[in-house]
Image (cartoon, rainbow, N blue to C red; front, side):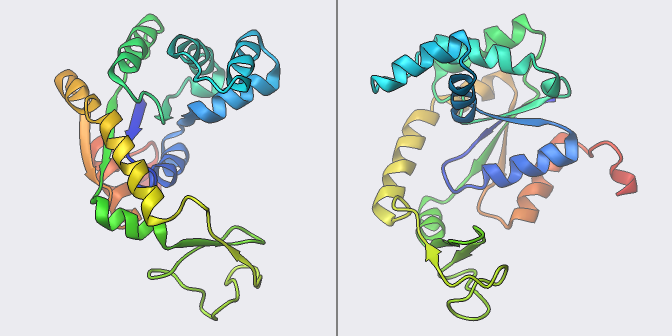
Length: 222
């Protein structure tokens, strides 16, 4: 089973991808993580990417596709993968289709976590984490049980991401919709696009995704 998760920052793709990894035996592939791993490994592709990134340029689609081809050929991707953050444009989607056809690894589903932009801005802009253990909190939805003290580790220092503010989040959402909008009819025409309510509780989003994918192996015993 090979999947693409579409959704803006804060929609919960990472949380759902982690669950899918555990429940279905899939591997999450983030192109950003993949690029960094290739650079660190010193591979030929990594060396090419390193030079481009050091010049402050965008890594060409062809190079990303080549890296992706090497990644999905690794043993841990045999049972299937989840792509997060790629493709972002129709040309990337077309190149991905060619790659996966060559490897006989077709996409099973493209799942969009549909969001309400205004509500998502509130969700992201209120986030903060414990500086010690990374436990996540929110101004409105999840305050520490004792003000100023982390529930998990007892830490008293908290941090907020500099880009987790309404202005920056709004700009990121606008960029996401601008880039991703053409992908939706592209995958709808292929019959692979599925939509879930990305604003629902995490458990409900997971339930909707599982309804699309079918029960995971051994689910009747879980």
